[in-house]
Length: 623
Image 1 (cartoon, rainbow, N blue to C red):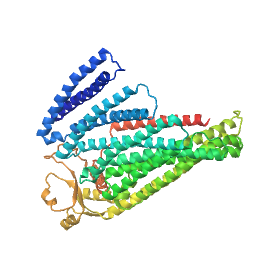
Image 2: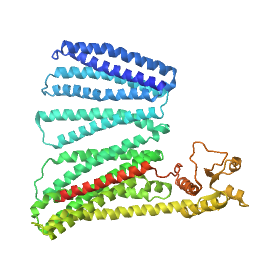
Image 3: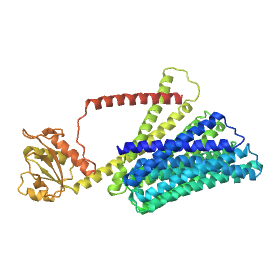
């Protein structure tokens, strides 16, 4: 009930607040700017919206404030935080634009530049800045007071974190664009009044972007430096930092490719197009941005140990950049091989090969170092001993990366082989063919060789992961003592399955043994079956973890639990032991249902159609 009321209150307050703010801005703008002359209907609509929206906001907001004063849970609720920080974001974006327009118009007039209706632009900047600034400041103060009176945690803290980092990111983008424009202006060729206007615009972007970024990033840094473990262990902060690095790295690498392509074009005697500073400026600025955020990540790592979710974000960033670098390197190598084969075949004049040579060479030189650096870091983490290395090697993102490249390489090799055989068979059957056969097959040969190389390297990586994972599992098994608590043939069956699947386990059968108490007391894990007539107080004396399959009889039934057939008990216990050794939550072993079988068949059919389609596309690409 309280949640429904919160949503009602704060959605209604948001509608009223936004309607009041913008109706007031446009009403004042129409009244104070003589050149606008709004229509009577427009003025009437703004007045009506103002009269309706202001009470709508005040009634619901004051109602929410009264509830917050009486109940700390109301003040700390995530819905209230969503209202506060959502409206702060909604005000911040147009407030930044109105301040920029106001200052840009003022400085343009001071520099002697001409503007169309500068009075209207100045009035709009003043009105919007005052109204939006006042509402932004008020809600910012309320949010700060709420945080002092009811410390945030969980979803409420996440909402604040998202707002702070979103606003910091927006300010960073504005600042970076301004700095890039300044570099282009300083080293470019613009002159006269045009450069003055551009210089004013760039400096305003630098100033406004820096203020927005610093105000929110400083707050985020203070929260991280506090004793709040929720802030320090945040995965979203890691996501933001790595996202900035990944975006900056991708943009810098792209511009580096254009730069190197221009250099290679010049060396090969081709005309170099474009301005050098247009690609150098983003490289310099974004490299600085990436290095700063990388240093923040290192500082964070020194302050607090990395959690599982933070490690997942880190892996995603590293593997994403590695994938981008590897794709660029593979395209560059494949393209260069294709050019070399065509050149050796004599199909094209050397002059015609210079353009692809420059671009493929630039792609290779740019992508290969990026991939090598990331892959070295990835492999170093995967080669670590202990649970950290196991988590790295068995991570989902690593397996997606390796198997993804294996899948694409397999399709590429398949397409290349099909095309080469298609050409050879068609010629053997008498189809006319004009031109150079080796040159025609050059692209298929090149990318087929590259795909084979990817299959070998990534296959070795997967095999190494498997060997290290198996070695770690055997080492972990050797340190665990397991006692089987069952009777007769069932105990032997359980022990046999466990010995087969976990050969290094120190395994004993305690059921009915003379020294059963000693074996149970020294065990790390006790597995077996549980009869309704069993005495639970006996097992409570032993510190080991207990894994039992409940077995019913004529007078007892386990409600809510699927009955276990005697033949499946050893397999169920082996599955539970495997999950326990791996530190995973226990999940029962279930049979494959009809729905799963139908879903698998549908998935296989879809994959087959995708493969056939990709092969056809590749054939048309090669031809």
